[in-house]
Length: 425
Ligand SMILES: [Zn+2]
Ligand SMILES: [Zn+2]
Figure 1 (tube, rainbow, N blue to C red):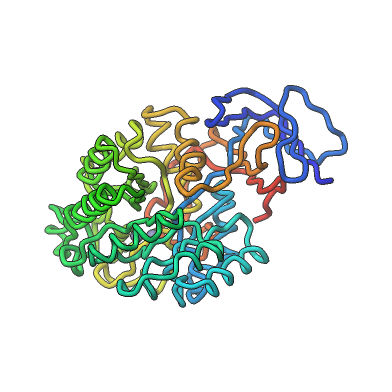
Figure 2 (cartoon, rainbow, N blue to C red):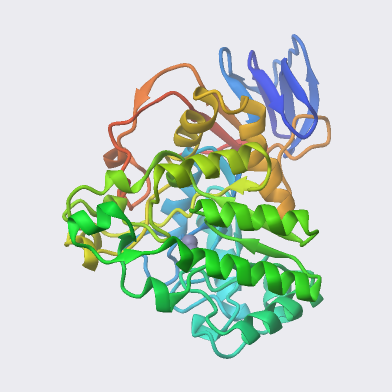
């Protein structure tokens, strides 16, 4: 019988309104006892004095790159990076090679994750075969194989009628479509937010409307069909307003944003050879950033996801327009989000933890750790007091593409516990 005693920490469980200095005994993958001054000499002991013990973070949007792009990341390296970031469960997008559009690929991801993964991995299947935007995938087959949602992430489903059929079909199987909102005729070959900064740099811009048109479309389709839809990586003020409108109308719309939209704006894009800021959707304006923070505070935006998108250095070490989009985000997500939301006084820590664990798990119906007898022992032990400087060159992820190196942060995960076992990374 495997026993782990986490003692001396402050236990925070937003789903139970718990915020108290308590010891936690985990037995065989579950929390078995919570109390003060617990003593179990036969248990492995973990000293959490001065630290916070919280439910493990849940990321419903990441790219693990395997199969097919193992030079960018593997399930082994990606899940170790996730564990280092405090995540105990991650959902990986299907834009691998081959695309995760059939049961064989889903099973391969699940088997590799079982053998080499450091945290729980839940695959997301494609909406269309090959993410080509044409033929719909077999939802029942993907669900039976273990997919937890559907998305053509990296690309939108351009054709509105096809997206409507996909949402209806998915809902019939109790699945949600996750929409990467991008009108490709508007985004064209833009590489940063369309505004003053893109003009100054002479780079082709992606207008906010390229995202917002599709956010509006998905909300209207969900309203038409009375089915749910989840909006990925919201980056603009207009998108926040549209989701707020959709929710007020009773539409079953949920939405996520990412840590980089909470701390970064297009002002960070200053020269065309620093491509670490290139991400899709792009970093927007200060006005957008403030609206997104407000959207998280008032619950319009339901959760924070990383959109962890590691790339090889050669894919970023080119001029801006040619670089691939994406930020390696697992190992900075907690620190950046804490800085933007808690240290800045917008919300208290339990609310941030809710946005990064309980709420995302609810959206995709995933198990989540908790601090109460019987709960799954998926926990993160966090230090929110010791300042540090973010250094992407030290990331466990193969992708070191992250524009926030050098930032002074205070929150980070120190131990990550999956099923009662401390993850080694
Ligand atoms: Zn996307
Ligand atoms: Zn993505």
